[in-house]
Length: 326
Image 1 (cartoon, one colour):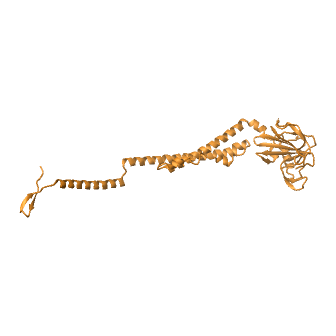
Image 2 (cartoon, helix red, strand yellow):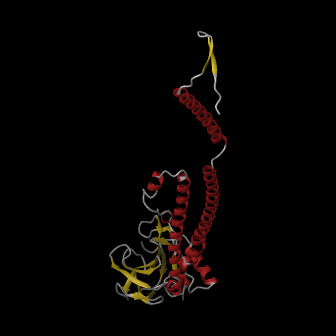
Image 3 (cartoon, one colour):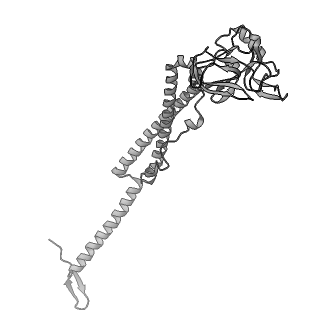
């Protein structure tokens, strides 16, 4: 039962009953509710400042777990990248060296992946960890690129291995003139006195002195790609494409024994020694080209010379004398 409250009225000098209005009750209740709400808000703000909600705690735990796995994946990608670099070095310095082919050019190994907008959608996303994901995506794409190039390189090496016999037959491994008289090597590769101009010029092949009509032999299997007859320069010359980047040239010939487009075998007679073009005596000018670059043919005389004979040929080739033609 509610207690009845009284107050003393000084005008009437009597105690009168306190009359509570409905509006007062409403204002009192609202005041209490506002006060409770204020203290509740303060309490909630303090709690949120120092304590995580269950949802936030779960999200933080998930982020920590994601960061852990990201770091783990990043280490694995880095480890795989190092292994890929090792495979590239073996490919260039071991496997390709064995088969006599040049290392892959740097621009080939640096070929791109995708387009300029490959990561556009990811960059425009609202993901809070998009930078982390972007970094990992780029690392994975880089690894995929290297793996693709290396896979193609190994395919090439595999083809070389399967065609090893064909490749060896295509390497210029014998002398183009019969080895009966080693003294026939009259001028080697390098700077020599030009027979006409009497100045030092780069002699891009080897001169074999021999009587007119001496047979000239193909030094490797291949296809005749050039037959040329000129009044000056190399005179009558033959060029053979052996494949695998090798070509050979035979100049100052007296006559041809093959036709353009004809396939020849190592040791097959392709023509005869002469003194055509800019030549001072009957001889054969012989050149070896690898990947378009003229190189010293001496490096490839290993098919029909023993160690003693090879030493003698090297000694003759290094003498700085006058070449027989140009």
